[in-house]
Image (cartoon, rainbow, N blue to C red; front, top):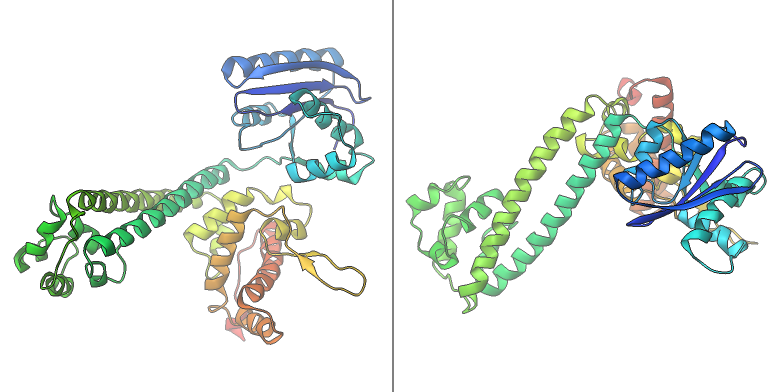
Length: 399
């Protein structure tokens, strides 16, 4: 961190942000509020530019909520070439515990951010609370938005499918049993092929075979249900809800498929995603999620930082004769989930990884613990691959 900068602290709110501006010696030279819209942003840059010209110092900005409530102001700051720091809320809370303020207001919080700048050269708890935002390739930012959107749609689909399954059991016992999964394409097409649910019990074989994805096998299952089909009285109004949910799942499937195509095409331009894809078991979605959430390796000082961020490393929590570890709080849960899915597919395909997993299991570790241990090892590999610009090679195939 350059100590000779014009320092700007921003306490981010949903509709208004509080700004404090200070000099390297700690002097507070300006405070003001800006609205979260274009005119407010314009006011912000005009006032900071005035101080920048007057004091002839480069600008460093620290704010809470990078990539959250701070959007799009944080992106505009980065495009101006100013240093941008994200305020780690957990470490800021720790700092406030050590150096409590008399009250909590937006003004006080903005000034506390300036204090972090001032003390960062002398106090680790202050230095660690400010995390410099490294420039991220635009393609990885796009992957981050696409994969997060995909995750949201998948979660929504799971919720609706669970509701659909429960309603089917209540309204027409045995109907859901005709399929192993109510989200199957053929079953959704069957549920939505008529205007009312009771009409499904009257369809003949010719009509069943005309439904997309319903062949002889599934038509026979439907006919077996039709022989003892029954409906609860609530079908008069709940049946319409069931069909609405089925159509919503169909729409979500189409949207997720479209996103998958976009993610796959976008990942072709991401060097980080392509490195991930070279590792056996790392599919299009997992590789894209990791590339999007990591953004750039430049944000980490070492592979150990990446391991903590991806949830593949535990922190030492030993005391006296007690030896223990605890999960870190600074974990990106999306990156961790993507890593765990990829690892579960990876180790059965690679002999060396499978042997490492079996070794950890033999040591008494549970499945997830053994997978995370393998993930910690693979983080070192990924770090080395990215830094050297190479792709993964499974050398165990050559032995």
